[in-house]
Image (cartoon, rainbow, N blue to C red):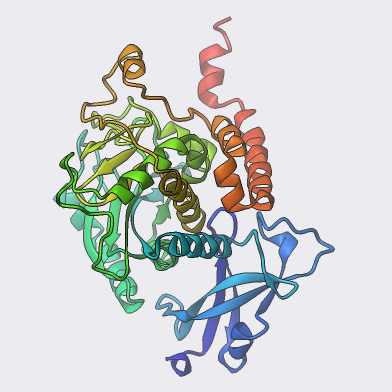
Amino acid sequence: MMADFDYYLAQFVDIHGRPKAKLVPARHKEMIFGAGAGFAGFAIAGMGMGPHGQEFMAIGDRDAIRPVPWMPSTASVTCEGYVGGKPHPLDSRVIAKKALTAFQETTGLEFFSGLEPEFFLLKKNDAGSYEVATDSESLDKPCYDFRHLSSVSSFLMELRAALAGADIDVYQIDHEDANGQFEMNFTYADGLRTADNLTYFKMAAQAIAQKHGMLCSFMPKPFIERSGSGLHMHMSAGKKIGDNAFEDKTDPRGMDLSPMAYHFLGGLLAHAPGLTAIAAPCVNSYKRLVSRGSRSGATWAPINIAWGDNNRTAFVRIPGGRLELRVPDASANPYLLTAAIVYAGLDGIRRKLDPGQPCNDNLYQLSLSDLSARGIKRLPASLPDALDALEADEALCAGLGDAFVNEFIQVKRTECDELLLQVSPAEFRRYVDFF
């Protein structure tokens, strides 16, 4: 396979999940799998390195080589960061592998996940602003609309073909709840492979959209009157693909969940506030995590720490024999998301946490007194609140590592300072002659 390519991308992600790479001619490809391709660590967001530090070496995984059809005769090699000959504790894939190893050592099982990426297809108008790329998108409920799915079918089919060439099996594609919003789902895999797949998917989607004259945006909430883009994660565990230790058809609650799954769920709920900082990692994320404002009638995003049977207003939905976490959005780094979820769930398994009773009501419509009576708490309403929760979460900090958590919080607090101190045009119009 390797001999068929002229170039290899030594590729990894920064703290935001943005792919970074060097292009290596084929005659030097073994460098990637040996000492690695060298990068100035200070130039990469979130690696905690200074301009005077050692080289960040991206060392390739021979089992993670994929063709890059939008770059002729090129393959991508998924890499992990090493510094001073050791795995770098702030590298996202290194963090995910450590968490998945801990899960396997604790349970004797592999952690499986499936991600459902939502995204917007946009184009620039004559005024230089972005608008949806599909023409005449004015429906209040555009979800599953055939006409607009059809209008970008050439892009969607080219993207699906690129994913198939990388052994990523797409099983459905649809127009989502917002105008210009789409979703492409691929089959589940072990947690590391799924994170690799999501990263490749984003690379392919953005490159192929550009070829078609569009921007593929993974911004969580580009339009305030529309629902945002989620990255729902489905979770299970087993000895191999096809096994499901989270499933138990004799479950007396009728959810088809095993005791292990309930304990894992208990961990997700217990660590929900801190977990949200990783799952919804930007200022814009919290404009998605609201109950009102979408013209379709629902935002489809959680605001409360609750779980329920097929309840799409809950933090965790139970689609039968597995768990679906609904708080992550399209901007989440899939490696960090995987690690944080695993550490939260493992804490639940070790402590045998009980998730309490399910809530199958519309959580958007319950009053504060109703929520309080049921013991249901709210998710953080802003990134600063979520960062405070992460910083105070001993189990997540211990798992992810203090060095990483400190770097993540520093990077994200800087982002908050830059954006939250801005005076928006809407604020100016509202207040300039109001007071």
